[in-house]
Length: 274
Length: 274
Image (cartoon, rainbow over the protein chains, first blue to last red):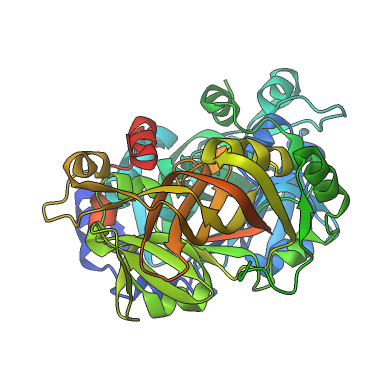
């Protein structure tokens, strides 16, 4: 459990117990003031509907992004790889399935990051735990109306990810691009860390509603956007986010993009990989 | 034009001219950095879908709100009146149609404010200009993908507003409450100022997409949520907003509200007053 340090770790097999513990241990703080602290605020550049529309070139570089958070996910310009940020280090997982270090000058089309400060941690031990069963379990301990940063570490018998091949101009909408430019990876028997978020329905055009994770192996060699996994034991850290700060891109491409369209179907395809 | 000071005021009768002028005068700034300045950033407490769901009691008081902006709109706790903030002064327009001063301790259910710094100003002279024709004209000079703060001053031959009567617990959803608790006002031959915003479609569950104004007469006696108006000459100030900072309420009512529901129809009723 290399990513869980200095935090009480609750071990249990029963999610009901987790739920009770979570609610009874909730910190009582002034939410307005809590939102002003640097920790557990979400910083986001661009919106998911712009990415879906094919707005692939952003203005924010990784140096700026790391000043906004030490934990998060996103996509690079020209959607050349999945962006993974954990403990202040950015990795790019490209369509060959390999993870690469990223220079401060590299830019992101969209990214959302926070200075992660988990308020709740626990271990789930369950034979054959999948992504779907994790979603059900986490759905019992978090509020669907709030935002959470989530870090999950463990050994994964199975880990299925994907990464897009870079797009060439003129850019097509993301769902269309992915039809022929999405690469899938099976990383069996790996150990690593998923970083991600859970967002409420009212942010559905701003970000991805529900759960969304990117994965990197412990040796920082492989990873991608998480489609599914199987594990017998995972360590979960949750940080409730009180504030979202959203920067609207200043580019002409963003300004001209068809952002009024309903892109729910496209989003489901893009996130699910099928 | 008491509210337009220190800014070039362009007078014209032709909206085409306004459009050309607007685009040619656009400031070129680094959008990421521009977003970090205190001016023209939007601060928002709670989301429109929570208000629609009947989450009427917020934690933010007017003192805190005024520290986030000197210009904006919102609704008070128990939706007891329309919130109007201009030049740092908060007014409450109640269901008797009268405007009242507001103490720093009063709390808002939802509010969105900015330190308003208009980047574009012009006058529209047109006999019988209505809200609908204003929307068409402004729609030609702003991008539907961006956020704008808008201040409009003038003499209004006709000004139609509304304000809600306060709700009693248990709170009903807003559309339901308004059916029997909405009061309409005709403020004919008044002079005053509309403050408001235009938001993009991708914020549709976070705020009201499109235009949204509250009005206060120059003598600070009357006003309300703007439903329609008629004027022969108005002074318009626009400020493009680069950043949205959204605070999620910490209340149990927010946490438990049914926020996954599609409330588009309710929003149309609530905003249009019909």
